[in-house]
Image (cartoon, rainbow, N blue to C red; front, side):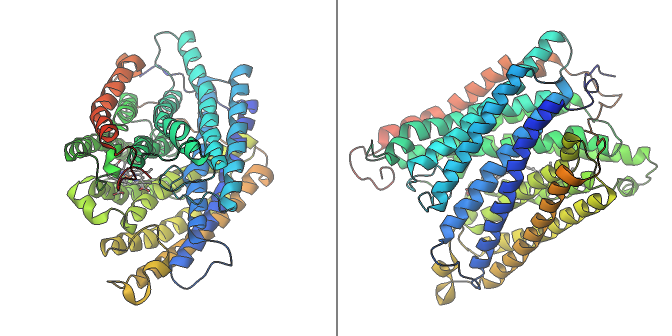
Length: 554
Ligand code: HAS
């Protein structure tokens, strides 16, 4: 059996727990407000409801996207990862924790600044950094602070990992800490694209210092960031799938080496694929679009490895418990435990969610679905179900672990209800989005813009189905908000486990090459240079500088 240090520290240090909880509180406030905005959106799109005076549809859409896509995710991920590092590599030092707190406050101040601008309708920009939509400079500055703050929250995780490796020479590092560090590195490299875009283009543009920006260049930099962003959301869910869920079901990690390899593959293949979001944009050569489409299929491989590993873990455990036949093991899994059931529903959703991703990535097929509400259906299955339900499953044990309380049977029951409601609500909403998308219903559009007699197909039933699904989702959000308050402040005091599984006895020893960050770093840089040099040179050379060109300058 492999030597691992995962069981040395059983609990998250109390001071680290406070830092982690601070992040988690902000995340759940964002969930409540962002979820409310989502409810308003589906109601408006159903054609049955008008927003009260003065509030615009796109304003609400911006609140929804920013709060759920950026704020909920980034704060929750930082809270979870700080806790995971403290639990598996040991308490942070005072300096490390201080850096983390500075990061937290920068993120919070930045969030508040950006929120004020959105509420004042000065930043109704949907995608956040997506020219030609222009926001107030305070909005860009606010979100820049969120990114810089998140870097500072990553710094202690990396410092702790380096410290651990120094103190434990020759040993394989704790898997959860390793995974948190890979995700932080992915985040650093990804946000460089958006940092260049904001600092050199959008901020000076919105301050009036420059007259125009090259729209295609800003979007290419945005998508250089935007695709790894989705894996920055996904990897913490995979952390829970690989390391936490096996322990909850009483099993073991199928293979430490496979888990690390899949994370390293994500690190290198997340980047050279951003152009698959721009397949319909003029100004990028078809050859480079094709190259990035092919590379997109490489980034699917670590997800297939994860699916294989999870099936193996479940089957091994189910058979250990006496399950017989082809599917007998399936019944033996702990279906009543919300710490398992809720992430499991997320895994199930990721099967069609991932398949939809393959459709999106399939070049010609992208022509059919791009800019339709199909894409909205895709990301509600991936980030809003697979990832979010896993975060909920984590919150059910992490919050009481950090606050010194327990998940009672009643709260466990409510947790299962949340998971089931979310699964049903999202099934209805995202199925309707996928079908309406195939019928050509556009995304990011208000009912009044395409409703009524002018539409080619009758999308209305699908819009109503979306409203039904969205309402069920909002009910689930109210229940989980109640649970979070209970688990943080009122549940009985006690010890809730932070589950960390050990590696299965028969698993191969982890090769040292999987922790050789220099080697993977070289591969990463080489792939980025390969995939982006020519497209960027093309865009810059061919932009009609000085004129108000059709594609580029705005
Ligand atoms: Fe995507 C658009 C391609 C994954 C999120 N994606 C988006 C957007 C978002 C998003 C937010 O190529 C919209 C951006 C916008 O606003 O314009 N996506 C992919 C591909 C994958 C993929 C190839 N996406 C994700 C993930 C996301 C996410 C993950 C968030 C977390 N996506 C695209 C493309 C577009 C796009 C194009 C642009 C579309 C356009 O035209 O605008 C792959 O990574 C997917 C691989 C996944 C799998 C599934 C593996 C299944 C697993 C579960 C196993 C289940 C178990 C349960 C074990 C192959 C791991 C056990 C079950 C038992 C029964 C026992």
